[in-house]
Image (cartoon, rainbow, N blue to C red; front, side, top):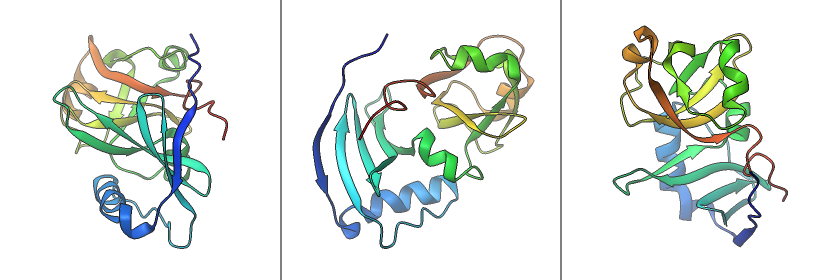
Amino acid sequence: MTRDWSMRKRRPVRRKKIAPLLLNLEEALNIDLQVDGAFLEMAEFGPWSMVLVDKVAKAIEVQNEEHERFVFLTLRGFMEHDDAAKWVEVDHGAIPFLMKGADCMIAGVHGADPTVVEGDLVWIRDMKHKRPLAIGWATMNAEELVSGSKGKGIKTLHWVGDELWDMEL
């Protein structure tokens, strides 16, 4: 089901205006975004506020159920930072379901970053190629995700093929 979302309130921003946001993201995922000298913009798209780096949506701002705000890379952002923390690996059988926006069941989980705790934003990757497939909220910690055999492990928020993935700039 495709929604007819459009980008709103797109505006250039100075790095110093969003530096705390980017620093929090870099620390949380243990990465270096390398945005020095890049053209930075902020915009709204559907329910998300986004950071665009050189006209590519690299980060989104989301809220959890307690209305706390979090910044996380988009799947396109993870394509450049496949060594980022907060990952969960799934087997080949889970991929078709994730590509349709389904929540991730723990039966398909084969590995997880040990720092993942319940309530974290995580990114899901396939175990063979390490490519990003989806982003979602962890419903349990890393050990439970890997050792469990049934139940919902991640509530999916953004996946390959959704409106944000297919967004045209």
